[in-house]
Length: 357
Ligand SMILES: *Cc1c(COP(=O)(O)O)cnc(C)c1O
Image (cartoon, rainbow, N blue to C red; front, side, top):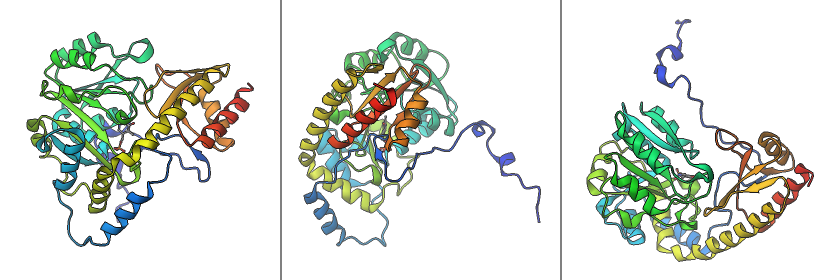
């Protein structure tokens, strides 16, 4: 009936430039592109999840406050229960922060970093403002404090250890920012279990600090989408107003509780990933035309003498998927996740082939 219907004409004009998130899918390749935990779940935990799942009734809505999970997170982090909010991945929590505090204002982002901060700011109708990191990717504390004084700055996004650069920020630097702004300072600690000093001890002193965490990386639950936020209870209370009531499904809540109850099972895997990271770093350093950057996370950023796009493509043709990070401040850089030992070896072998080393 209506041949002239044009959905684009109805879309918010400020979203016209957004492109859908695309995760590369290449069945059968060695997957070192998404910073996932490469190991199978510890069997005792898996058994317990299946066992407990048998007693669940999936016809009922999940607990919107995820009280059992919040209790586990409180025990894990030492934060009070009213200072914790869970999300369908920390991605959802980032969007909640933008929707609650960012819309119509400015959001500072210490770049280069995780691209989802900018995307979620745009979706929420906030203006993302990049504040470039210094050479070596340390925070430019002065520039951040100065930029935060301008206009209507609502949020400041920092990531430590930073994705994709791998370097952590000392809590003293973050405290210097917290002390000098009335904006909310969000520190994304998605990789905290692998290294870097946590900002948790600063929570008591600074009501404008928000810490983001996830079970997607060290705890191997990327597929179940479980993230959480630690903040002053007054901040959490405001965030609860925009949270989808049933954002975290019953199965994910159950699995997350089980994982946290047995979290020491992951210590061995984390140790192994850290040891393999050191070896992978040394091996990368030894390849001419490759410059790896120091890291405290489960991935390594490195620069190559060849164009990153070509390295990425030729590695993929040889069955190894990593992430091309080429862009401002990251010229000819790629990011590789620490995988299992044989995966790391294959990656190194193919990289040497590609670089003709
Ligand atoms: C992987 C990652 C996350 C995790 O996101 P989830 O939605 O919890 O899977 C958050 N922040 C950064 C910087 C990441 O790299």
